Length: 165
Image 1 (tube, helix red, strand yellow):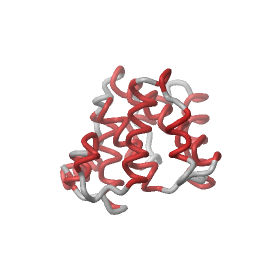
Image 2 (cartoon, rainbow, N blue to C red):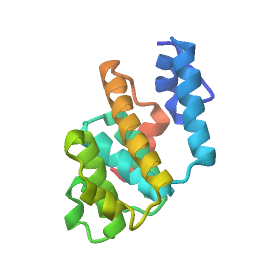
Image 3 (cartoon, rainbow, N blue to C red):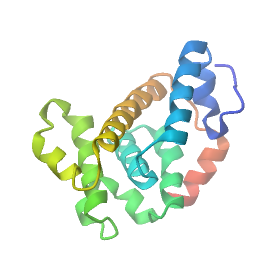
């Protein structure tokens, strides 16, 4: 795939998507708008993205989002053990719920029930729940896209990941 610049550490992803400009423009446009106008807090977002990416074994996304989660306060231990969230002391109830929800949406979306939404509403409004759900689902799509096309992890992203791995 052709190298595309201007997308920060996501040049491999952008380069693949650039093969179809409507995909690149719309997906990166959506991500930009969610970044600028999103209602979901950054910690919840990154917890969900790392959890989904680990569940799907997407090395590309784990390498990109683990450092972001570390920068906003998660320890290396927490990131490494995110899927064992009940045994990570630094995760609070909200963190655990976000990871649990990410797991359910990723692994068994047909069985997500009202009880988890009642619990989510203790921390999030409806717009945040919709954004969280969309970002979890979108992350799963990115995981599959990146893995199927065997995208290389950019050197800068790999170096940042090495610092938290």
